[in-house]
Length: 251
Image (cartoon, rainbow, N blue to C red; front, side, top):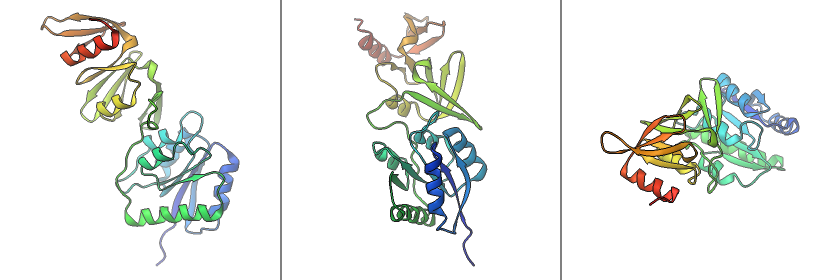
């Protein structure tokens, strides 16, 4: 009995690039195109609605880039959908493989190179994939924004708009402009990705945007509290106080 066809979603903001992948897939009758997307928001919706086996994904796109899309879509323990990046930029290759991508097709590529990537995807799917790592930012480059998914709604938070971050087990709460957004990520991993000159760990459960700090004052319990511009008070540990003094240049 023949195997059912594999479903694919194509994501690229350039129609000609999507057309090329579509033409190359025409030679593979076991692949069925489920959707084509011109941006990251469409991609997230299409993946949720069609549950593809393979995702052909551009990196640099308006609104959300490919790495952010990969962070927000649901992938099972086997890494489905298998992700093949299709891009003109080679600087993201290492990060793509860190995120458990199957292959990284650098434009321009020929049919033979495309077919090899597709065969790798088939092999990965047949083998049950492997552990899935979530991308944060290209190595050595701090995050400029944090993307948060709530159902089908995606919110893009520039880091300068984040007031502070609170740990909630394996999640973080990002507070921005009087609202909070929940994201499945540890505080430690987010701390590593955010700009260190802007964000400081003031407590084991809190990261603070220094631009929001109004003052540090004592608490009735004998510790310290960071008072934000909007009046919010956050606990400051001894180690956090030392970090604040070092960054603020105070004795």
